[in-house]
Length: 502
Ligand SMILES: Nc1ncnc2c1ncn2[C@@H]1O[C@H](COP(=O)(O)OP(=O)(O)OP(=O)(O)O)[C@@H](O)[C@H]1O
Image (cartoon, rainbow, N blue to C red; front, side):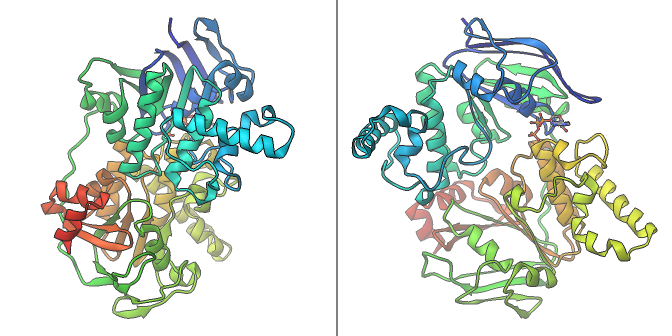
């Protein structure tokens, strides 16, 4: 019997016919990867499965029984549990691991607090052991890494004993080695007979974990690949509707140095970091979580002080005390988290894209306002934002398309230094390539720094890749001449790789 059967599912938002007759089966003990271009309808399908939205037509069954959840709680009670995209979905940072793991059974463990706490820890330890998680159940969740918090979110989901577990881009905040821990956990769950629906844009995830790939395009299933070895190129073509063009990075031959980072100390390291980024150059900074990437980005954007060493822009000392001062110096940053990226939910797409210009709108003539909107409309086309109209609310866009708007916003700015922190989170691989091409095509006149945990992304966009590990540079690679094995070893912090680099 199938864990889940979906037949003829339809969903529209006004005139936008988003799901157009979806048929999909999930078997127990298999990992089905759902891939699709941004706006294809993946999240909408998930929202219907997990009871957030109702379908307009179609049927679903769970282990042969009709399944039409009234709401999210009903879906969970009947066996469909979802871990959403946010890194630590539903995990409460101020509580310890045990309480987080056992949240849904807190009242079962006795009235006395002492008895309850002890019983809770024993039960939580069992859950953690069962899932192969090596965690101190007394630790506060806020002290744990993103990867550990993600594991707890999944372990908690398992406490509901799901028949179907849905994971929405679970590795988007994880580095490769942390993602591998997650995959080991999913291997266990697969063995335990859970049907897993896994949404991802990352080919490395898909290669590692998929038993079957289902592709969506424009609200329909456009391809199913279930014969080993899986046909990844075929899946990408089915998803995009065309073959992917090759990347051809014509490495920029470095103009003058714009940004110089001189002997800057990052936390946890006694080796200073020095490098420069040149006019027209795209430099990717990669490394594990905790490598110092975010701290470096924050320093350049004036959000963290540079205590040792200094920064220069165009040869002049640059010591921003705030993001405002950074912006005044022509330094812009697209931050990794959309919620801190100043998306204004009540504004339309075009106004969100031109947000930095809005302050001057009152002083602008109608003609200039038209120009602003024209620039936004142009950018929407250039980077392929999938929308009905640029006057739609930003909230009607799919996650990946919102991310494109945020990148477009900063590309419209006349920046001297552009910092893009995880710019491709949630962006499909076809769009990623188009945006990368656009960033490179418009790179003259500024230095661009891309902070990316995913090596594929760094390789696809950068002229030069700098690897950070524990606050120090352990490798620098020209993209025209990459030693991939050395690069991977450096990112993961292999000792011999570090010795080579030093
Ligand atoms: N509440 C809504 N109102 C109007 N349109 C919506 C709403 N939610 C989704 N849509 C539209 O439905 C379509 C599919 O969106 P969905 O979020 O399902 O795509 P997706 O495949 O998950 O994309 P992504 O990879 O970017 O997350 C998009 O065109 C989106 O604009």
